[in-house]
Length: 432
Ligand SMILES: *Cc1c(COP(=O)(O)O)cnc(C)c1O
Image (tube, rainbow, N blue to C red; front, side):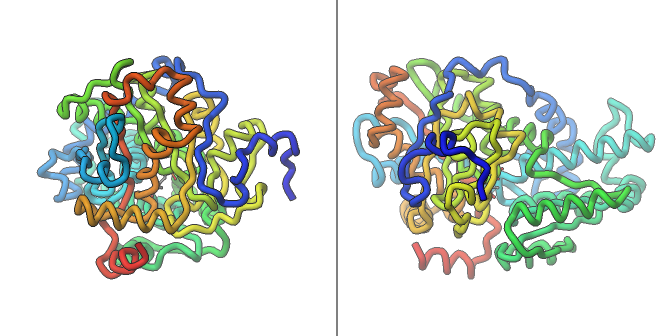
């Protein structure tokens, strides 16, 4: 049973254990925290820049983009008008990581970065790389033969496995993905189609991670990407902040006290949304307001931050079962690396039930012609919670945002979908 005290549990919002969709405001939020936050993702941005040529060589679909891993930012006014039509709606955008090249999800940002860091390290140790060597040499046979001695492994509900497996195999590594038995069949198949080994484990995502971790530790040529505590993943995600900054500038949307930015990020273990928000906070501090979206059955970050980071807690401890169709978000316990980094910078979190995910994904496709997977639709309720709920209005009042709402920008981060096969899409559509 839980070792979490009654006092700690009393900090949870009413209705959380009953799976009621709700918005929780983080009482520890400090608007001014931001600009000086460590770590600095500039290392990841620089790594991506110097490895662009390598990525373009390994993945032909990246060559038109010059090897840059970027996703579009698109305006979704029509969807806004069906979900929220008023003078205070502001400007809505969808950040389309569902269509990130190669891996089709936000996981590419963190995953590719961690593996690029690894190949640089291995190649340097073996004398194939100096500080200023063109990274494209890492696609040459000598480097591939070297990488072929190593096994990269990862525990995943699917998308991180795809990202790590694809870049790992692409660079010549043996790649193994540990998955929970309930992971989606098509994701396992897609991995195997690419020559990536899939090992299935009973239990949930955390059990697959634990099993993968211990197998890798026993192998001197094993490297484990640890989604529960990886700094390179976090930094790779955080580098997305500069990309969004440039895109908002092109879209003519300033971010400052008179033009606040609200960002809605689907959250699983916390690495992707946490890294992105961390990067955005460093750029804009109090002018960016970050909200995480979590399934009603798996609000692990909300639960951890509400209870306090000194006490590790899972959603099982609060009577929830972590059962959701949003497989990318089906995580019972937040990352112990990321949760403390979010303690002062996250504005709040809201929960979404599965039916709403399917319905919103369907609506996004019907109205805007954009297909995303259910997990990726989790952020769509965000502006409604912030603009229309009593808690949201309390937040806006507290931070003096009422008067600038018509000039606010809302970015809903869409996190996965382009690799979902048509037959599975049809099923999801029918449910929506
Ligand atoms: C992994 C994932 C997320 C959340 O990322 P975490 O790092 O686990 O918090 C959100 N959406 C999709 C589609 C994902 O695959």
